[in-house]
Image (cartoon, rainbow, N blue to C red):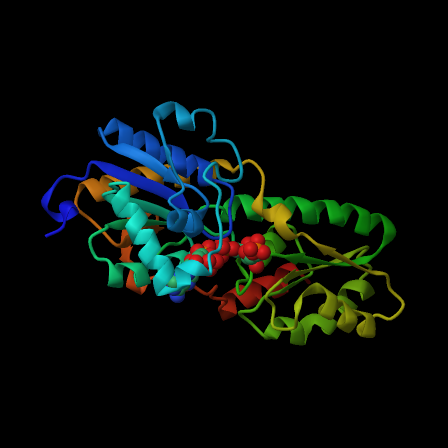
Length: 332
Ligand SMILES: Nc1ncnc2c1ncn2[C@@H]1O[C@H](COP(=O)(O)OP(=O)(O)O)[C@@H](O)[C@H]1O
Ligand SMILES: O=P(O)(O)OC[C@H]1O[C@](O)(COP(=O)(O)O)[C@@H](O)[C@@H]1O
Ligand SMILES: [Mg+2]
């Protein structure tokens, strides 16, 4: 039997992996403070799985996380790691965990990171992991909302409001491309919140079929500006490709393009993200102390819940007929 199964957990580690989001520092703070409050030792693993493979550990104390709850980015850094996808990489990671006497790990990551840790625990079963979901794409099943989505959504909405000002003054059409590799959550949320005339997302094809109609109707009823929000992962290829289509429908109009890009990943986290991050961080350590392992913390219908890593999949935005009806009414 392994140490973690026979003895109390004494030393844990926390890490961030995958694309960063606002709220990671708030989550790290909650994990560290809860660990220390419960007399656990805690180290940070720097640079995600790359740092785990390299043994890049840093001791953490209550003061290490002072004054970071409001900061974007991650004090532990993050990475995407090709080496962790290999058995050799995961063996190196295991060796470093054992050498550092780490009994359990809190992993703040996305669906990719959880797939990675699922591969790891099939090979090395004696290290309990608790996952905390973060991604601005909000596309992780097992939780209604991920850390970072709310702040990214607000960043995108504020940017679209600004584009609306200049579009109105000059009576122009703009395409605004927001992040979402395979996900329409930011596009849908920011488009709805900013009164966009059209929202193009990977989850539905009806949006592009209606585009010409919506634009012509809007212009004919003397709208001074038209804003189309496009998810980067939209099946038509994002803002540049869609702009070509729009220019065909409205050949005499100015068609501007604005790609928001990584601006959506930065900035001070919203209150909602800080609160979510704090709840998830606290719950993850308590879960380890209660003997839970290899599960992701989540929140569904405002209740905290847990999902085994092997069941953590991508979540797709569900757009049903009543949502389409609402969008049709609000953009008319
Ligand atoms: N199937 C897998 N097997 C092993 N490692 C994986 C697997 N999928 C992802 N990973 C690891 O997890 C890292 C983070 O995944 P990624 O999809 O980039 O971000 P996120 O965790 O935010 O979804 C990858 O860079 C890789 O090291
Ligand atoms: O910063 P990178 O590595 O280029 O990744 C960009 C991608 O990361 C995201 O911001 C989301 O990343 P995660 O799934 O890792 O949270 C996508 O919206 C975007 O397509
Ligand atoms: Mg992902």
